[in-house]
Every structure is written in structure tokens, then in C-alpha cells.
Amino acid sequence: MRGSIQGVAVAGAALLLMGCATAALACSDEKAAVAAIASKGTMHIDQSDGPEGFAYAMVRQQGHWIYSRGESRDLRLAMSEHEKHPGDMLWFRIGDKKYVTRNQEVLDAALEAFNTQSELTDEDDNLAELQSQLTDEAAMLADKSAALNDRQAAFADRISDLASRISEVRDVNTRIRLQQRIQELRAGLTDLIPMQQVLASQQRLLARRATDLAAQRSKLEVSKVEFLEGVEESIEALLSDAVQNGQVEKD
Image 1: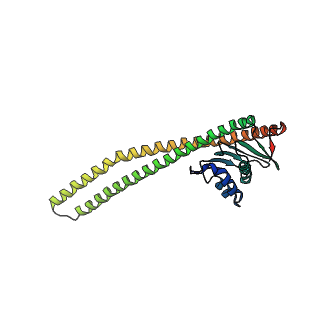
Image 2: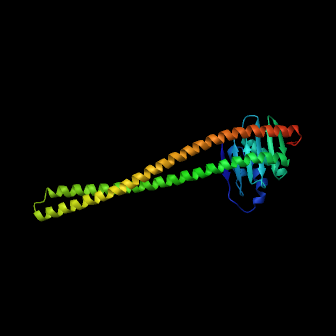
């Protein structure tokens, strides 16, 4: 499971962690538990599945920012610990053993990696916003193209009707007027051609932009995967060293 859950600022945000962590522990559904943690206050949770046997959750800025790697139950356990002892912390699990550290040196080292991860997430959000804008532009051009096609069809139908009437009219003056009207309609139909060409050009440009954006998103996904693999290795090594150096407490 990957994703981020953002809440909206509300009164009583200071009570967020105590109330929501308690509510989360009571949830039987794992996804509902994560949602319960972020149901109040201004909060950002960056959570994803982690390798079996290793999980961590860093809580900072009064609990408003959480970087979590592992199962939802790991996040719930971390938030339970934060409820008992508020403040910046790094909770982690190696196998069945659970630890927590508030050592500033360890927190700073981990935070450096997490900040880079946040930058990648922000870039992903920016590209998603651009994708949304392109989708809106494509819909607008599609509407314009449909309207233009309707106008062309209306001209063609009117010309066809008048042509049929001419064959039935014997009065010379009437036939002349009908022929003149057909010529006017044909001229109007011709006038629509430049508009059609402009729309086609805009659609081609939009398609190129969409292709470029897709390439950027694909490249970013590769970067995120590679970065996350590196982070896993460095964080696990960092925390293993912290255990050896006595910079952690057992949870």
C-alpha cells in the first residue's frame, strides 16, 4: 500500500495524536486504522510496505509528519508509543524486536533521507497536477472539435437540402437564389477549415506534451524505486548501528 493521507486543520489539533492513536488501536481494519490516525488536524502520512522483518516510523513536528515503512500495525504501534511519550522519535522493528530512539544524531541522519523522499513525493505531486491540467485541456479541445464538427455537419446538411430543392423548383429566380445560398454555405464551410487546422495543431501539441509528461513520470517512478531501495539499506544499517551503540530503547 502506498499513498499519502492529508487532513484539514481543525480545532483541537493538539489532541490529534492521543485521540487518533487510541482510535486507530481499536480499528480492526488496517486501512481504517491509518485513516483514523490522520482524521484530524494538519497531518501528512507517507506510508508504504516494507521488507519482511523490518519496519520503521519516524514522527516529527508534533506528530504532523510521519514517515512510515511497514505494515499498518507497525504505524499503530509507533503512534501508541508517541501517545505515551510525545516528541520527535523514530520507532522501528527488526524481526520481532521493537525499539524507539530519540537520539538527535540518529534522528538527523534518518531525516536527511526522508527529506529527499519528500522532495520526490512533491515532484510526483507536481507532475500529477500537470497531468490533471493536460486532461482538462484535452477535454476542452475535444469539446471545441465536437462543436466544429457539428457546425460542419450542419452546413453540409443545409447544402444537401438546398440542392434537393433546386431539382424541384422550376422558377428561374428561385433557383438562382437557392444556388447563391448554396455558394454562401460552401464559403462558410471553407471558412471552418483554418479553425479545424488550428485545433488539430493544438491537439498534436497537447499529445506531445502528454507523451513528455508520461516519460517524466516514468523516469520519476524509476528514481523513486531506486532511491527507496537505497534508503532501506541505509536506514536499516543506521538503526542496526544505533542498537549496537546503545542509542535506542526497547519498546
